[in-house]
Image (cartoon, rainbow, N blue to C red; front, side, top):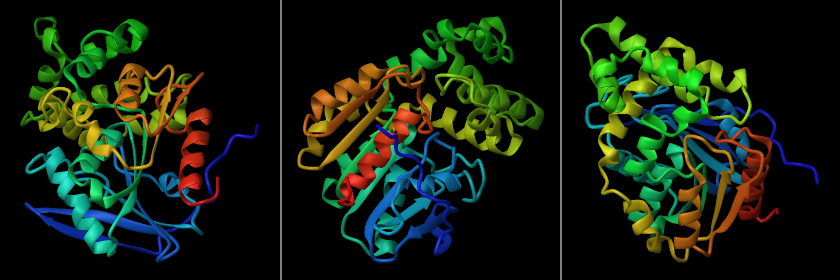
Length: 317
């Protein structure tokens, strides 16, 4: 069987900034065919921004896709700003974008943190979601955060974990997220940047099954790392402003929404247990646990299933 690959490179047919209040202006693009099947793409992180390759996850002849940089990252301004930047601000921003696009419902696509945000949006506004495609499921429970930032993945990547520990004195390492938070919000830019690079590279180098410099490389850049680390850590030390287990608990609100769940068997940041639990709580969605795959959407088996999903919901598959 031939695996699906990305659609050809494409430029947006429209772009701009949307003032969402609180001093934030978010950058958005639209790609595909105006008036075709509406969709919105939710990037990871939080704080990661979207890339040109994300435009290529949808058949441009059949979709009209909105992609946007969430508050504080990518081309949105102000950069790396934590003020009025929570899960629920972002959920409200998605609704503002839907209204701007002039559509009643749209397909919601999100991976990693984007899956968290997609679930939060769909459980808040189920009537606005025509279909839901989620990858690399992250439900932001304390157990998931501890697994990645305290003990768990540390056992799989001891060399990379040692570099992640380096900026933090031994007496603070029992609470790594909080220790990083102190440094990522420090007045001294050099302190912030040292922490930001270490935080960002820990993620960039653990999201693929095999080392992949094209994926991990951007995580080491100063501008990307600063926004990514500050925003992601800000969201995670606050547990996404959600009750522990809320997204799985409220998965019944997804009833009636056609969906596809895609997860890599060897996803290190996001243990497969939570994707499996989402599947159990939302059984009408198709579920694919991809063998020989890690976390990143670019893993061949994961990418194939994601394109299958977008093609399916466009009436092609």
